[in-house]
Image 1 (tube, chains in turn purple, red):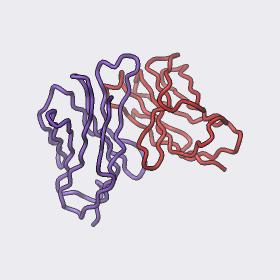
Image 2 (cartoon, chains in turn purple, red; image 1 turned 90 degrees about the vertical axis):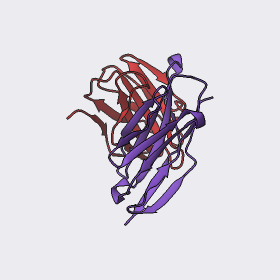
Image 3 (cartoon, each protein chain N blue to C red; image 1 turned 180 degrees about the vertical axis):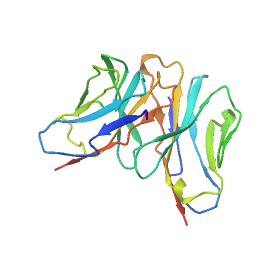
Length: 117
Length: 113
C-alpha cells in the first residue's frame, strides 16, 4: 500500500541553523511523483517542489534543497541557514502515476518546524 | 491575479444546520479538491472532481456533499449528518490529475456553536 511517513512531528531550531526534514515513502509503482508543501501559520498550503521517480538528481532552490534517494525510498528536504519565516508545517506527498480512477495524493502527517530568533 | 478563493474565512454552524463553503478558482484548472485538516492528522480528502459535472468521494465523504456545475466553482456543503464538523477546510485545484501540483486556497475554519 502507498504510504508517506514523516517521522519528525516537531522540530525546533535556532535561526541560521541548517535543518533537514525527513520523508520516507512506500509504493508498489515504478512511476510516481513526490511533492513538498509548506503551510505557514496563515493556513494556505504552498507548493514547493515536484519530483518524478525517474529523476534522482538533487535540487537546490536558494536555501532549500531536496535529496531524492530511491534506494532508501526517501525524499528529504533541507533548509540551509534557517530563518524565522521558515517556521511552518511542511508536508510530503506521493502520487502514483497509474492508479486509475482512484488516483489521489497520499499525504504525510507533516513536520512542524519552529525557527527561533 | 490567478488563484483560489475560499469563503468565508470563519464559519459557525448550529446543531442540525447545513452550511456551504465556497471555493472559486480562476486558474482554468480542470481538477478541484476538498480537504479536511484536523490537528495532528494531516490532510484528508473529502471529495474531488476532475471535470465539470463529475466528482468522486474521497476518504471521508460521509456527511458532506459537493457540486461541480461550473469549472471555476466547487462548493462543499457540510450537512447535519456530519457530527464532528469542527475543522479547517482547504480547497485546492490542479491542471489535471494528482501528478500535477495542487494550488490551495486560504481555508475556511468551521466551528460548532
